[in-house]
Length: 222
Image (tube, rainbow, N blue to C red; front, side):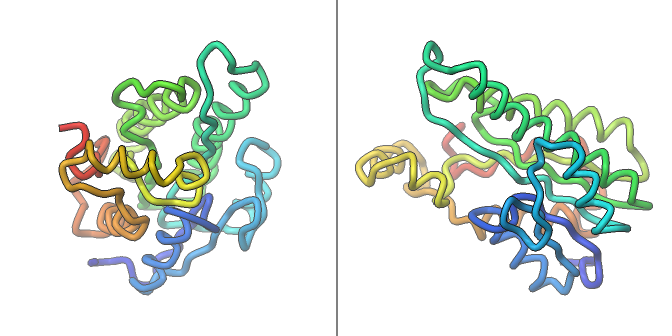
């Protein structure tokens, strides 16, 4: 990708799944990458404003943020507790807000990318809190794209089913196979495929893309 070599990149949730694949891809492109996660190179709970501020103080000047940290709980709407609702929204939406704000303050010309989801585009049963958080991420990205332009580009990536440790923890092999049967390409995405999209969107090749919510779902939502 054009223009990624030597860029200073921060990836939240960078220790597993999509985040770990994204850290690896940007390093392959020659970028200087730091992972921010509960168990990352910089340890941080993105739900805690003080921890986020301290983490970005350590990062310093920044060219690219991939705000990817997120959690998911599979439960019926009527069973969601107040604490669960707050925690999912505070990590998935609040965490993206906090990290984007801290990153934007440290950028000249930069790129902010956010991990949303196809769950933020249409309803999925048993994930009311997660769905609401990801819908919020999409509108946050579109709003920041307008407010921070032309200095900073902002986009949301909306993966469908991705074969991550989080996904495998929630779904049995039979459930995974049933999902694959509904996807035109017949399989889950690999984390590396989503990481490749992040690398493209951060690169000079995507210099006219901002305010977009880009689906990468094997044709599921088609």
